[in-house]
Every structure is written in C-alpha cells, then in structure tokens.
Image (cartoon, rainbow, N blue to C red; front, side, top):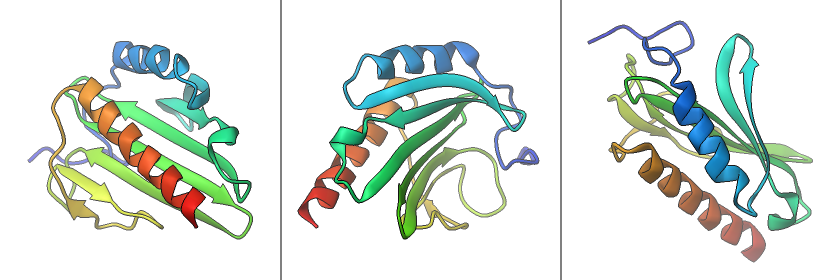
Length: 144
C-alpha cells in the first residue's frame, strides 16, 4: 500500500482538468451559488457554495470542497453550518491506515475512521452520487 500524504489525501497530484470540468458542470446548476478552484491552505481544490434558497433558514451556509487526484483518488467534503452546530460528511478514495481505500465519513461529524464503501470509478458518476445524497439531505432538512 502507498502511504498516505500528510493531509490524508492521495500521493498523486491534483487533477486540475477534472476540477475544471466539475467546476463547469456545477456552475451550470441552480443548486450552486459559486464554484471556484482555490489553493486553500496549500491544497488545490474546488470550493463550492451551495445556493442558500435550497435550504431552510436554519442552514446559514452549505459547502463542498473537492480534491480530485490524477490517479482518481478523491476527497469530497460536504458541510452545513447552522447557528448552533455544523453537519458534515465526506466521500473519500485514498490510501490510509483507517479504512479501505474507498470509504465514507458519515454525518453529523465525519469521524475517522469512517465506513468502508465502494464508489464508482468515473468522476461524473461520483459527482452524481454526491449530489443525489445532498438532495436527500436537503429534503430531510425541509421535513424537520
């Protein structure tokens, strides 16, 4: 097994063309307010702010942070901020000492270790899976 990098990510470099593709795709949806490729904390990633009108007033902000690597490893972190708490989860594919390469850090706190999982190989299918799960979360928020 290849050792994990210092940030728990992949040993491969970030795949900027994939981030640019995901950025274009996400900007074309009404669910996304902004999608920007940034170098946050020395890590190139796609930072996505989801459209506030999709959420009840109790959610102050909802974001996605996406890192996609040239070997198809990835980290996709979803986070909601509410006045009294945050709710987050993460879909991951990367070498690590705590789970299989594909794993999920479940809500509400995205703990490590997470749950072993199996993700699609294509970035478009992974994005569709994540957005579907976010839609389910939004529906659950509105029914609370």
